[in-house]
Image (cartoon, rainbow over all chains, first blue to last red; front, side, top):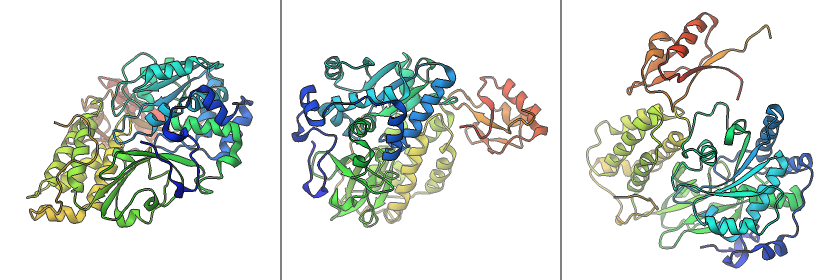
Length: 404
Length: 73
């Protein structure tokens, strides 16, 4: 599932080489000892490194660390840190792969984060491999003991407020975030939720410093990121690539009509446009890159994904509950060659009505996918309106669970 | 603390059930969408409307409408 690409001009930082899981001695031999520096110096290092979150939002890590530490000072409560290994995105495999191959790098990063914010409790939340991760954690002598929790396999389980609630003993559902999780999360304590890949990078910055970190990537987007690559005819692969790497060097674009960047809350780009794009933190989301061959119908693929996204709505917020199923049904109409009536205008109106009107960003991400599909597949939309579909291969392509 | 920060309307979407009372009390700021859920214009609530806005918050059957100080994240 993992591969090292010699043409990426960097050796993987995070994934144990050879695709074999690294136990603690192997891990320590490869990376050397972890130093627990003082929190202020650590925060400066992270700020200088320019590390951003790898869960999809690319938020600057040092700002989140500082906000949690500040909330802890203000409330007098020791914060909680949570390593987010909930990879609800069906097209993403990078967090599962990282946890399977380099669990100790993530656990190192969790300790670094705990140290940086002065946390009293630490959790690692994952969907699978819980006993393996528990055994990895048990082999260590961590200053803050780590409790591994098994998350339900749902698209929204990894949403920060849902995760904080679940770790606190309730159902994994997003909540109204006022105050935000960083101020009041698990057990009402200030809570740092950080993606597992982010923590792995943090563990390396703590060891080797910001200058080393910045030797990969670009000045404005330093470092590297794990990506899940979907190319037709092969299993998804997880690779590590530096920011700024041209996309066409990561996935072959010959014979492709479009590329989905960032997963099911992401953006469709025409292949000609994607060929000009670099790997960019603002478009790559949590690192999913999926190519669509000219033989497939992008509208049909998007309709499949939208049905799944509508089913994955927690059903708590009125606009999402009402809007997403309607949008999915409308897109199914557009994916079927034939009369479209008012479907396109309905879809545009509902997109406007669900956007920004929920406790989490599920509606916003869904709208991003819809709008980019309508733009990228505009010629195909017109063909469908005339009763034609240019695709020749009806086999489903993108991984979508729970299909009928 | 002589000057209070401007207030804006915040909806807790997980609580809101589309009763619609807020739109009746604050028609200048809130309309209802086609499913009966509030569409808030997002502008700060002017001083003359504050009293009615507070009533809308207190009268919401599920207490889904809150007034929050702007400029806070």
